[in-house]
Structure formats: structure tokens, C-alpha cells
Image (tube, rainbow, N blue to C red):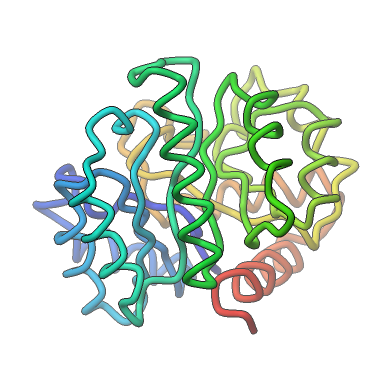
Length: 252
């Protein structure tokens, strides 16, 4: 299996990362992407590339957009050239928390789209309460990079629009939550060939681990629920989503 969105460089994993990786291996997780979207964690994420099962993505989160400086983008370009960097991001818009002014978020998001196109790497998009502005920005580009909508939380129309654009939908632990009936219903009609599994660890642990630190091994719980939603065998879901991830990130 493939956990397409982790934050293993987060300090909460400092004390027991090897144990976390061992549990992931036991759960059948063979590949993980560490998504490093805070400038002060980029070097730490790069160091994780020593593990054969961990790949990297680098970007500036919309929360951090107001702190982005020209020097950050010079460094970012160096990181994107690393052989184990497989994506740009996560980057995008977040109007739920709005930690950075929306105008700056848009500017930084556009820069990430340009970087993904220049480096021929997929884009990991973060969007919360900002779908209209996100679609408006994407419409400005004649050509878009391949992309995944990380931790998708929109409606069925928005999901289908993204799929029609060729994008993937990141399915995270939210589908295991009791109050996620609408999201589960949305997933029933989406093409499995455009779905990816992710934990977004250490955040939002799935049922039955709510309240605990999330970790890659828990992506198995996401796969189980998605299999029920799609009325498929869990092994089939695991195989399809892993193939999808390899197609997006490794161009296999």
C-alpha cells in the first residue's frame, strides 16, 4: 500500500520514527510521501530520503504563505531537483483558518503551479473553504500539472470537476468519521482510478484510533472503509489506489 500524504518530519515523530516505520511495514505500507510544507522542516524531510520507503514533496502551505520570501523559492527549486522529490506541495488556499491574507495565498499558490510545470512534477493541492477561488486560479492556466486534491472535503460536483480536469482525489481518514455520511455518499459515484489513500498523519487519526496520533499504518483503516463504500474487496482497493499513486508520482 501507498500512503500518499504524511508529515513524518513533524517533531511528534522524533522519538519513535523507526517504530512508526516498522508498524507501517507490518501493515503492508511499502511507500510513503513526506509532505514538507513548512520551510523550517525542509532539511529534515530531505534527511528522511535515506529511508528507501520514504519520498518527499516540498512546498509552502497556505498557512505559511505570508512568510514566504524570495530566498525560500531559491531553496525550494534546489529541493525539487532532488531525485527523491516526487511532488510540489502541499500548496493552495485555506480560508477556513485564513492564517495568511487571501491575496498572498493566491500569489504563492500560482508560484507553486508554475514550479510544478517547470519541474514536471505533480502538484499536491490544499483547499479549504476556497474552491471557487481555486478553480478560478486553475482556469488561468492553459496547461496544468498532474495533481491530487489532498484531503478532499468538497461536494460531488467539485469532485467530478477535479476528476474531469485529470486530477486525483485524496481520500483520508475523514471517511471513517461518524459525521461523514455526505462525503461517503460522494465517493460512491467517483471513479476508483482517480482515488488515492492518505493519512495526513500525525493529524486526524481514523476510527478506531480517534484521539491518538495518526501514523501511516492507519491508512489500512481508510482502505477498509473505502472498500465498503465501493462494495469491493479491500485488497482490490489497495491494489487500485497503489497503482494510481505510482502512476501520479512515479509515472509508472
